[in-house]
Length: 288
Image 1 (cartoon, rainbow, N blue to C red):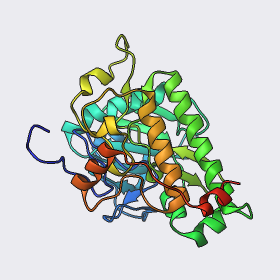
Image 2: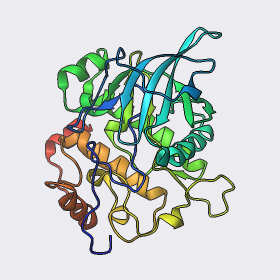
Image 3: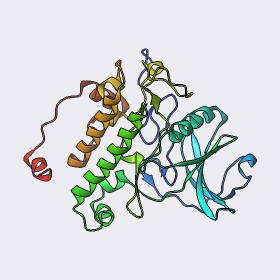
Image 4: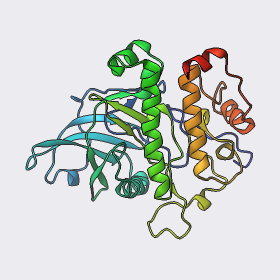
């Protein structure tokens, strides 16, 4: 940071030199929540995307990219196509595509192709951002389909843990775990999204991915869920993601972020301090 003040955050609260982009089927409406967009919006794409795909409309837009809905006529299916909004973001999208190509897991959206442009072709998913369900008991009741709501949230978290464990087995660190980056599908599917900040933990990795060592001194992620070493000088390891998973559990139990504060600077300071938190008897009852 070098005395230049705290890094800027996007509307969803994520900060980075390459910041993250809302994934297929969601968009940031400006107040940090993800909602289902209007699929009838005009598609904005370069001509080289068309090829064998018929563009239908825009699913969502973020600071770095746009997600379109498209149809593959020969396979009779719809897909999501993620494209950089500006040429300078092309490298990050290609890196995210490489990460997804290495991660085949039921709780990670599969990538179908990376086309020139670049344009990343993904499974089109629908549903609700988990963050909305955590803070809307009525919506959570509907999504849980009769299951105890707390048990439902814990089950979603366990699915996210499985996806993160798989990524770690491939020596990949997510770095931006938060409920906004989890989609609960229309049929109960659970997906961990937005791998745009992911880095390789392997110093000898042959994939053209950012190495964790090269990220030393940079602050990337969402301050409300950051581990202390992510908010300041420190070595990033698998434990960095594990801390964020614990921060998500904290939010499930308390309805508040683990690193509170009014604005990015205050949340970063809270992350660095990592003060202990005293949970009440009600939490003990919830957890059985």
